[in-house]
Image (cartoon, rainbow, N blue to C red; front, side, top):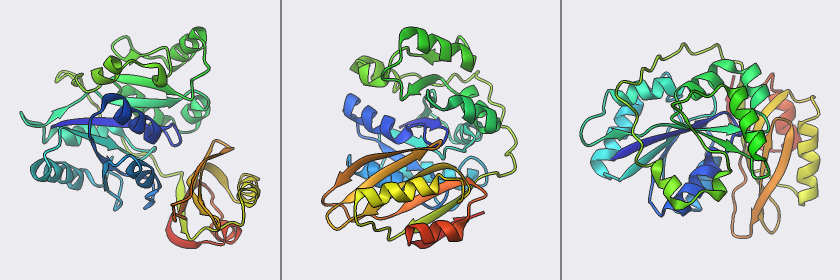
Length: 303
């Protein structure tokens, strides 16, 4: 069984990348997921591709849940024995701590693949500046760095971001969006093992700046009403919103939306979907006002 960590800051596009990898490789993956807060939005999106999802919601696998995380991986190995486990940690995880935990259980039947880090080509500068501890730890543990939201970037723009990130020579960096990769390039991710000599220095967990709020039973009369609510959410009157995502239910469909760095996007709808959960992550969240705005039921509030 091979274990692949796919990390990236909040909103970088880890879930979209995992779905694309599943389609491109034709492989079946078990996904061990740990979102910021007890939200299962990403697992619902991944389940649309019929993947097996294991959610770890009782803490962050990068720090307090090291032992429980290792036991979870061992349990999956012993019960399901899949070919591959993908670990998708929270966007504010420390991959160095995850690797430290994995190395304790690595033996001949469990291999650790070289980690993949997804970097948001549109928002990485602000993420690096405001949350350097998380961003730099993710980058320093990378075996491959993938630029998301880069479909329209030129070769010179890829080069510019490569230099800005200061990527080391031993880290793979592809100068094209992953939608253009041939199957062979995807398969390389499943055969590149982390070097036993690669030194991992787990860093201290920084004091939490971010908090999260999860709401359920989110209903809107139309997509226009959802847009109105999202624009209000981003007005500055509800806190500094770093990330929001989820589903809002209309009479006929469930609408999937995403908010990253002050920009919202309606990403799809499903006529057969009854999901109506959202999670909002940021600083100084005005939880009462947000709950009133969406007229939803609070299912989790993490300060």
